[in-house]
Image (cartoon, rainbow over all chains, first blue to last red; front, side, top):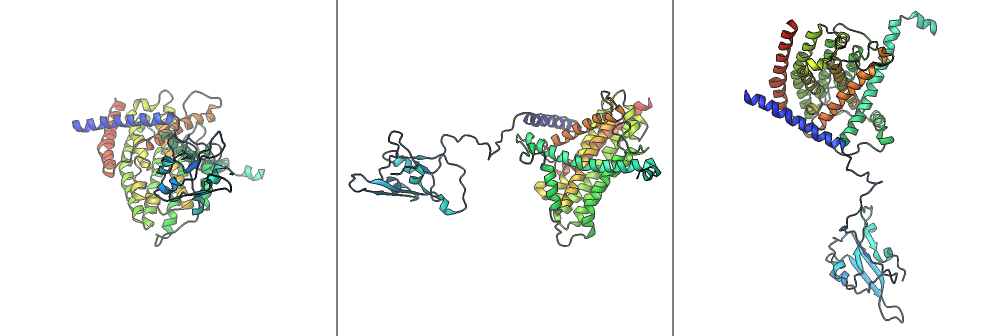
Length: 146
Length: 328
């Protein structure tokens, strides 16, 4: 008989506590974001696909087309090609292609680059209908015509 | 036209108008409740709820209604023929009848039956038949289980409802809802019968198959319970019936325990005091939605134990005490 009434009291108390919990949730502001119209800031450690850093002084990228990134890449998804212009001494970057479908965002290319020419972009929420949409022309994306 | 109207007895015109208003109200209530429930569900979970259709999602429910009307009625193999299509109708049709006796304000009552209370309770029980027929004829194990649970649940919870209502009847000496409201002009019966109110309210939630007693349509175990196989308009008829039964239950609680239309006097109080009635009713409906988003679903044995071990003994003791006090 004691059990009977203590069950009743405990149950009633826990129900009232439950009401309190949900009432608090009802009165506090929503935490969700109306996604396509609102976005939350991208966190500092976010890794998008790699991109070339544009040097502010020269207005161009720093890549010397040494190909270290392409050789180090465990997924072999980077293709770098340099061409020596006629009369020039240094090779110039002609093609920097990233196969993002294979990239695991390990970041070895960013770490290994001798001139720190690479970084992760802030591009997120990528989705596409074809494989070709993820063959990213990193050089063209950097917007340097040289 | 006017001569025709004059030839008809005024009672006839009154009934036609009342029927139109009641049916309009049934649909309006389902729309408002559907919107409120989804919005409140969102806020209880710290979401925003419907936001896309119309201002703050206000048009969501009409649009959903149109979608449901436009949908095909799918019929599974070997369903119980006419019964399959009859059961949403049986769910939907009797919901309008209790409105006939509910006193919204002193003058806004279609008919003041001497046995109004019994009439309402009898009409509410119709829902069980609809749920059972729908579940039985669907040719689906989940539907069948849901229907069986619904019948067992409704039978066990009908008893505490009747016993708790009886204690009010003992005080007022009347089954007429209007008389019960008039008796509460000085104080509300919830003050003298708090236990009866609690029992009535809890059993009412179980009667309308609402969470945490929504075992007949327990999503996690029975897909959608008795209305698993219903689509389109048939499904929406079950939903409209459910929301209307919630309204009727809360309206009955308002009449029996919260003084019906009584409140701060208003101009044209004979009619406008239905504002108080509707406010109290919707406040109780808010509490029901609040319950749904607070409590987890009970197990079936817990459901039965709760009714037979707690609600029924307590309502009996309450009834006995009321009888003694009234007699003294």
